[in-house]
Length: 374
Image (cartoon, rainbow, N blue to C red; front, side, top):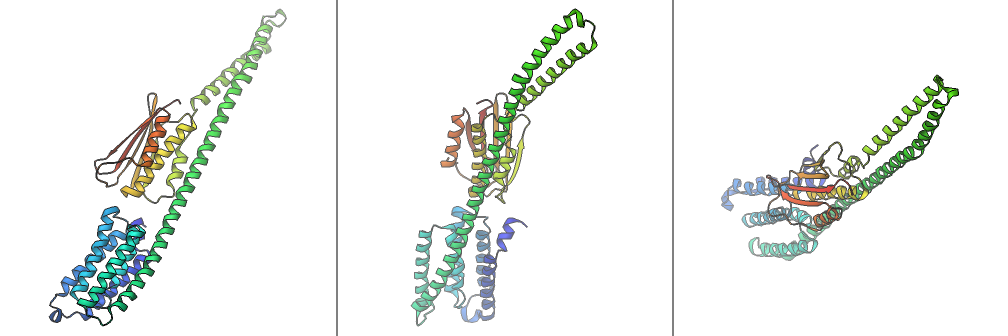
């Protein structure tokens, strides 16, 4: 199931839909256009607009200032309906707004907004609805709002903590994979040196001794000695070939570590391409590449709401090129925060660099480079 659709059909959202539907049902049953002078279609339009904004915010489609503006717009719509008609279920819309407040605003700002809207509710009850006990009704609805806000805050906080733990676990798994790959690479290099220095040395000594035997008159024409000399030549050539191939493959394979980093995130989807020969030489280089991809993933999740992240690692001459691009819909000038600044510093420390820009669609495009040899 699509991630946004799964969010829209979550239990918390479903409870909101039921409350919204119950309010609309009361509106349809109780509305008298002659008494109020307001067509039912006008009220239904405001009610439907509230639902559309509610779904846009809770689906995660809107973030930042846009989401905050949409929540405040829902509060405005709720008060507009309360000013136009007097239905006891209408203040429930404010409870739905409060659930969203704690998601898009800081705790302090959420408290300030809740206090302000309940002051407005009190005056609406007293001046517009002309209730006998506006304070009691206000306090009752405020208690419901507080309960809903705390429940939603704990739910969102638990979800955020879960995501952070999943990302941290993926980071540890990626680091472990990197260390394991580094250990395998070191062991492969050690074995190639041993083959070259020990077996190669002894085979060379064996060849010299066999050459001496071939020149000895007592073994002239002996096919067994000639065969041994030929086998020694072939074995030495094979060992040199293995050593050369091992050294050609020298470097760390980052594919598995990068995939582990992306595993906890349902979105964006990782599209990874590592060209042949694009292998880093040291753990420091591997860590720089890994942290660059991690920062690209984190930015795509938190800021751009991207669906896909493309990561391409290729070799160009004496340098490795890392291209990270997402299909987000951001706008405005990109400013390097702590994460991007740290990425640039890490790359520059090993002789590389970083360029940051926006794509034509508004996504983020990171281009990093580093030398092949440390």
